Length: 201
Image 1 (cartoon, one colour):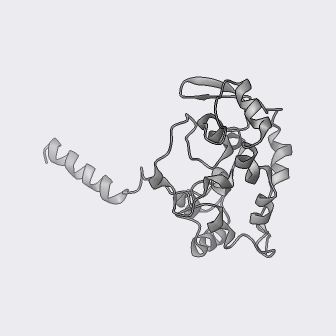
Image 2 (cartoon, rainbow, N blue to C red):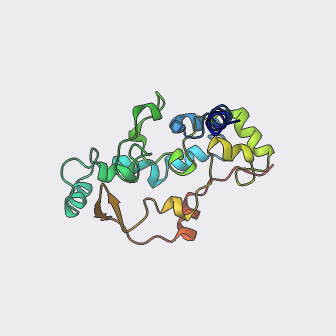
Image 3 (cartoon, helix red, strand yellow):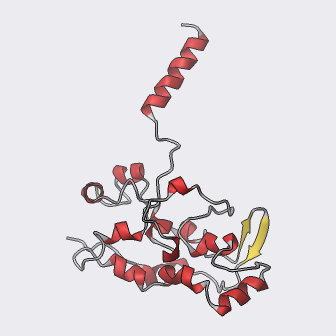
């Protein structure tokens, strides 16, 4: 077999065995998570999130204080429209460099005004939000142990995930912006404020 035929065969094999390797999951919004994660039996994660600062993150940008803070770091205009603010105050409408993600990455019911939603921390959920997938993940020992969780992009956030936003400054489009409301970040302490585990059976 000559090298050209071999390369074509390898490429075809790669394409048919890993068609979704580079495909991004879609963001579906907290409403999809709510369908299972609102009951006491399940741990009331949706209610815990609703009461958190994460859920209020987008709305907090509408305040006079937010406008003042934005101006203090050279962000002009409405903070609710400024990518420099939206990078961290919403679920990932923009990537960490301030580049807008394509509309195709967001489900029809995804609402940016709901702030920092479940998927900011747990990864885009269109491949894991359904009950049968979550049940399989639980049967495999939970998110940390489950091969299915890894395959569908469900993660438990660690300090690195949190520090995509909880940092003193961030670089967006080649420009460094100071976080005007940053007061330090103690992962071990602050993660306890938002913990919402699924109760053990």
